[in-house]
Length: 258
Image (tube, rainbow, N blue to C red; front, side):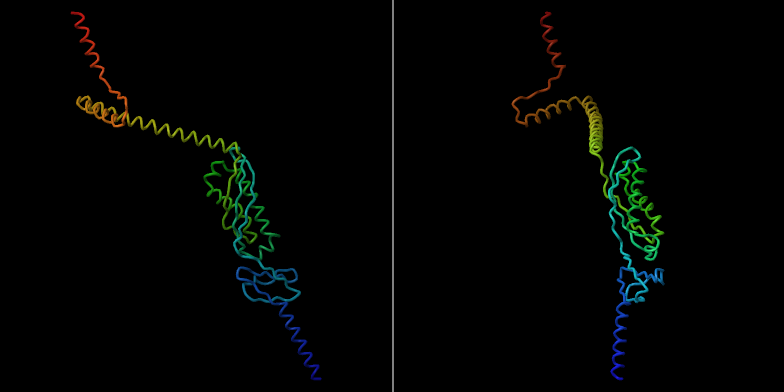
């Protein structure tokens, strides 16, 4: 009789251990547990730590609550100014409602990926090429809003959307290079013209000063000669006043007349 009681106690203990082993679950800090009892959502979402379920009746789904980095494949489209481009992006999102992420959508990762691709193509069609290249922050905000609106009902929150790269056709790259080169040449010519204008004003002021003080012209001539001679040139070009040549010509004509 005693042996039967001991055997029963051991069997009960083993059965209890098996039950606890099959019922025990551990939810990690970055996870939330969603329990389905006979196919229906049961109770609140299980928080991190140790928890138990009813074996063979409850089924625990663990949902990762960390931020997910999802690359969006490159999408080709035509911009509003009729330029064919290829744009790729990256989406940062996280699950904020574990129950809705499992119940409201079949695969929230796939749903977010498809919504991001569709929204990216829509953004390309609504934007100009200059906006894609220079005003990405505004486009990122619009893209984030387009993806986040339907994702709220899925228990998913879009944290950030970034456009990574904009690929242009080779012909467009060459055209943009020529445009940039022409713009730089235009600015160089404007700068040179402005420099000539400033120099002409200074020369006019110098000429006015030399007209009032004739000796300043001679001093400037001597300075020029010194500067040219310092270069160790074998030939020295000396400016000669035209008035002096005319004086010598008149001096030669007067003796001939006499």
